[in-house]
Image 1 (cartoon, rainbow, N blue to C red):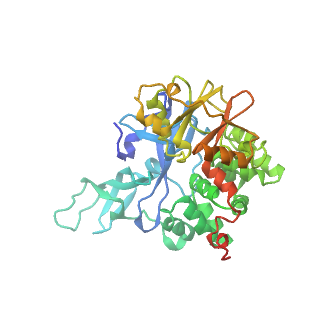
Image 2: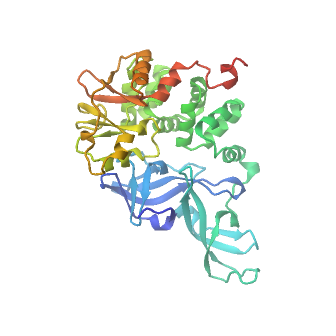
Image 3: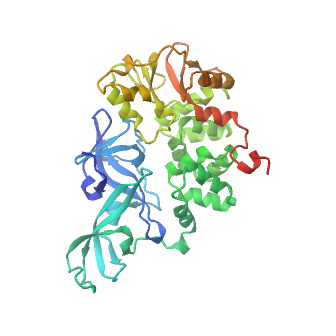
Length: 420
C-alpha cells in the first residue's frame, strides 16, 4: 500500500526497486536542507546503498511510490556517482535524529527520535512532523512528562531553522521555493549577477537544472561558467539531454569535452549524440528520453510509466512502441499509443495492439518549419524521430518547437511587447 506520510526511520534498510521489480539496493538515509523561519524542509532525495557498500543519491522525483517494505523508482537507470554530501545538506537519520531542540511554546528540552515526511500538492516531500521525547518537565499543565514520546509539527520546535542574517542567499531561495521553475528563472533574471550566482549556488542540482532550462541561453551559460566543474557536470546530468546539449554546444570545444568527461557515461552519451545534429532540425531539437515500451508491454505498464513526475506533460502524452532494445537508439519503431487511448483500454491489453502506425515519423534532418507543420497537421504534442533504419532516436515536443520559433527575447515580456 502506498503511504502519504512516511516516518523516515522506517525507510532505513528497506529495498529499492525498479519498475520491473528488480532490486537496485537499500535505503540508508534521506537528504534534506534546513530553511529559515522554521519552514518544513524539502526532502531532496534518498541515499541508496548498492553493491559493495557503494552509496548513491536518488532524487525524490524518481520515487513513484513508497510501500511498507519497498521504495519503487520510475526507472532502473540511476546515476552511479558516489554520494557526496554538500555543505548545505543534512542527513536525516545520521544528523537530525537524536538532536536536542526546545519546544517553542514553553522552551522545554526534547530530543528528536523520528521525522515524518508528507507529499504536498506540488509532489514535493516535506518534513512536516517530528516524533520527540521529552527530556525535561514541561511547565504547561497537563502536557509532557520526562521520557514521554509524542509528535509535534516541525514549526513547534526551536533549534532547526537557519539563521537569516547568516544565510542571505538561502533566505531568498526559501522565499522563492514555491515558484515554478519558469517563474524562478524570471525572478533570477532581475537579480544582479552576484546575487543570481549566490542563489544558483544555494539551489540543489535538480532545481537549478530546471531553472537553467527556462533561462535565456546567455544567462544559463553565465551561471554555468560560475560553477565548479564537478557541480556544473552534476547540473548538466540533471537537465533534459536536449537542453544540456544545446547549452554545451555554445561552449568552446575544450570546455565541452571537459564537462562531458566529468558527467556519468550513461548521461553523457545521449548528449554527445544530440550535439552531432544540425541546429533547427528534428535531430537537434529532440530529446532522447521519451517514454518507450516494447510490444509485450500492457496498458497498465504504460500508464505506470507516464505517471513519472519527471516527465513534461508533452512527453507524458504518449508512449512509443519499439522492438528491443528500449534505450535509444532503439530497435525498429512500431507506433505511438496516446494517453487518451490508453485510458480507454483494459489494463491488461497490449499497447502494441492499440498503437497508431499510420503517421510517418520524422527524420533527424527534418527542418524546424516542417516539424511544426507536421505536428500542427496531426495535432501532436510530441512526434517520434527515427534514423534510416527506422530505429527510434528520440522525440520532439511541441514546447521545444515553440521555444525555437518564438523571437529570441520571448522570455522577456517587456522586450517581446516592444516596451524594452
